[in-house]
Length: 501
Ligand SMILES: Cc1cc2nc3c(=O)[nH]c(=O)nc-3n(C[C@H](O)[C@H](O)[C@H](O)COP(=O)(O)OP(=O)(O)OC[C@H]3O[C@@H](n4cnc5c(N)ncnc54)[C@H](O)[C@@H]3O)c2cc1C
Image (cartoon, rainbow, N blue to C red; front, side, top):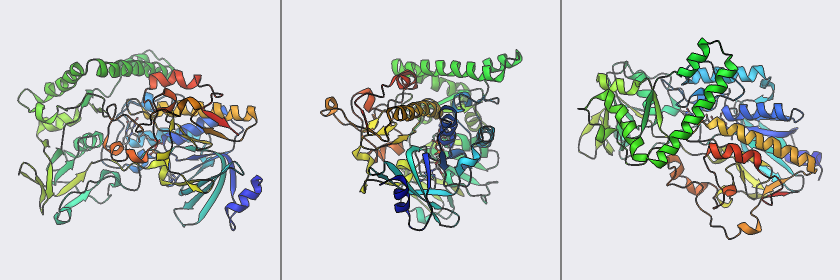
């Protein structure tokens, strides 16, 4: 079957647009990947399909008070576009930066908003993906065919956050809000608020509402690590005083941050107890020796096993010190009419309860994939370096770093994809399928990520949905930027792990 026959077969009623590359998602990954594609392979046609009505992804979805990055924007921002503000940025600042990237690189004409992809089917007869989307504004189906799918859909479901199944939630008479779907009509003034959770979201939200509420309590089951620092980078300030060009400031500061993060990660592994002491010491220095830091801010796990939230200018801790915010470390027994009954027997009364309890993992955008008519279950596949899957042709997946800025990996994957597409053209092939080699067949297959290495809730709840990992570097998702930045450019595209056709 030739391309046009496939196009007609995909839909009887609609014309089907064909592109070389179809990018899913207009978040920081999708826009960054599109930029790299236009630079490295300017002759390729492409579209970005995005279900929301604008770009930004995470930074568009999350609208709770105080929403900001906890990575610095020199590394969370793109390598090619200098970040000129303070390192920790608000969602609006990140969207504005992404908007500039879209405008400066003429990317808007490639983006189709309000297009939710529901199905994607690979045909080995045509070597094409058929992608079926639905317009979210009028429910109209819109179909595309593409040679290559570049999955930049993030890792969690944007339509709803994760809320545990608590007992008697229906008895509670106040209002329950998940930060991922922040309501516009919420009035916090003089209200007693409980925020459940102590991750980055809680740490951001609490200081920004503490002045408005009568009181805000952070209720956590167990403590989390935090890092405290100034929302400024001295080296950047010095370079700017010296009138060094912003391109240079960005690159130099980026290198400095990466160097320091590498050293910090290594220290977390080599001397976890010392790092733990330092992190907790920062908190004691603010809250004073009488504050019960042992109960509320001393985690039982090693630093870096979960993401460490950065607290700029210590705002969370200053809120606690002022008495406007407080911390309760306890477990929820059940909800009551007035609030939450804790396992200790204490009751926390609240007008509003905010559930900063995390995400629902979304495996590749909740798209129903088929390969030659057969439903694809990613749990049956093995990851190729956390960016492709065995048995799945012509698809790359952008899953960023947890311990370094997500976007660093977007760039590495983009360079790899562009190199792979070029290689396929040179070879005159239409299809590439990651495949276990003969020497891999007895390899033990393990969960996608080692829970001992990194174990956030949304991963642990959904590990059964994720691809498997092997025991060799090429079949693992390493989460190690400092290794991958050298390994990815050196990947041998003629290795037996790539089967072309
Ligand atoms: C509140 C918050 C703060 C964070 N802070 C940081 C930080 O400081 N540093 C860091 O490194 N990481 C941070 N992260 C992780 C963060 O999600 C990533 O860093 C990054 O923003 C992800 O970008 P992305 O483009 O890959 O995915 P997303 O931002 O999730 O964007 C994916 C896009 O794809 C679209 N999409 C998904 N499925 C479909 C479909 N089927 N059809 C069409 N479109 C679809 C979505 O609508 C969305 O717009 C944070 C996450 C959250 C939630």
